[in-house]
Length: 325
View 1 (cartoon, rainbow, N blue to C red):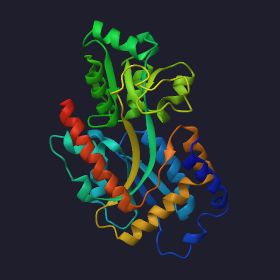
View 2: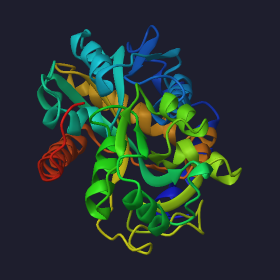
View 3: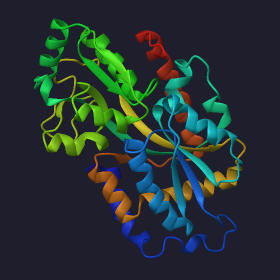
View 4: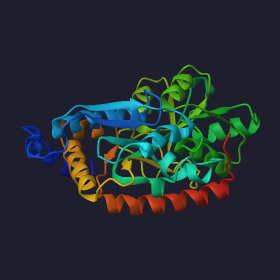
């Protein structure tokens, strides 16, 4: 467990008794808060948002309603956030793809994430794991590469949709390994996982939070961590570099946004509430257990991070030659 995780867990107990007390005298909120997840139920973002939403409800003293609005790799749901009144009662919970990758792949963007949405805070950082269905019978990354080279165009990789990090990761795997595998986009990581578990598709690069338990039960085989270091939750799984593919490095993260025009003071208030929520024992412990890492930033810091991530994604999209399918 790293220092940041220890700090979150250590501070959690102090907030457990009555987290809503400091909000009781504020005019906001005086009704339920809605968080839109722009992907299908059952995926990594949906599960993590519901966990944090439950904590946020305790902090705010008001119900927090999580709504799924899947479509267009997350753009459909975030477009609804863009159109919402900037009063703090409608927020968006997004993975990296819709905010920083989609603008460089989509044929027509319905909004500009950097202008039409107000950054609120990053929430978690999530390691990506390359997994395969056991029927593929490739216990190592090199074995998968060999099989894909022997059968070009025969193996499929699932993603949460066009312009998502799993899509980007699959294309990066193809380039770095020199293999031909076919992209199958879904409307969220939940439906993609269901077909992977059923053997309808063979390969997926996924948030660890989504596949960890299925790796433990043998329903999926983990071949590599697509990051610079092994993860403590899967100590036997090598990094891609250790498995012989050092260029296969990618990560995912989740963040929260609001409609552009939301007052700065309200954004700061919401950010502080989210910070309290992720430090609640039941939330901090679950985030840590799932292999993710809480990362609470300020709206300004998250805005700078989005700019940097968008620039990095643009370069990668151009290099890989990715198109919307």
